[in-house]
Each structure stands twice: as C-alpha cells, then as structure tokens.
Length: 149
Image (cartoon, rainbow, N blue to C red; front, side, top):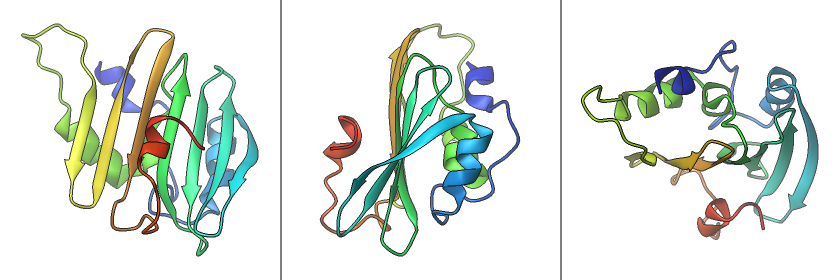
C-alpha cells in the first residue's frame, strides 16, 4: 500500500491549488494525452488519458486555479503529481497503513481546505480531490464522484 501511495515520479511543480500551466507539466510527467473536455463559465475540465488507460481530470476556475482533480481507470495515477507535495503529504499522513489489519478499504482525507476520496480494486480505481474553499460556488461536487459532466 505504501508504494501505491508513494508516487514514483518526481514531485509536481504546481497542481491542485496551482495554476493551469501545471496541466502541461502533469501531461508530460504522466505521459498522457490531453483534451479540453468541458468549458463552462465558472470552470473548465481538462482530461488526460494515461498510457495505462486511466483517465484523470483537472478542474480549473477562469482565473486558472486548479481546484479539483478526479480519476478513474485500471491503475491509480501518480497522486503526488496530481495533488502536489503539500496535499499529497497530508493525504498520505491520514492514510498510513496498519500492518495488523489486512483489508481493502477506501482511502479518505477530510480537512476544511482539502478533501479526498479514493477506492477501487485491481483494474478499477477511482477517486477525487478538491479544495472546497477554492471551488466555484455553483460547482456540483457530485460531478467529481461520477466523472466530468
């Protein structure tokens, strides 16, 4: 479990909470194809398809701030790359494995400024992270749970 959470590539420049310019950095480091999936007045969604077949989405405000990410697919993406070092460290600290308990469970972090939910099993992983105080006021959080709508 630690290796899954550790993130195996170099750390992110600016991702969750960073500026949209980080999308190209994410695309390169995740070796992904990218497309603009949705462009609304209060946010846009950039979708990356990783070589593994996993789809990762970055949700961006008009000022260029990445306020949410989501993913779904056969493998977890590099969460350190999507979250950035600071948020990833907080997520990892909240989800330290207990060697005495061997069970599959969804992982979560909930803070006033940072929320993560992730789960799945081999071949079918899902998850999302968002910054509630940074998300547009009319942003439907359920969009993250069901993919970009």
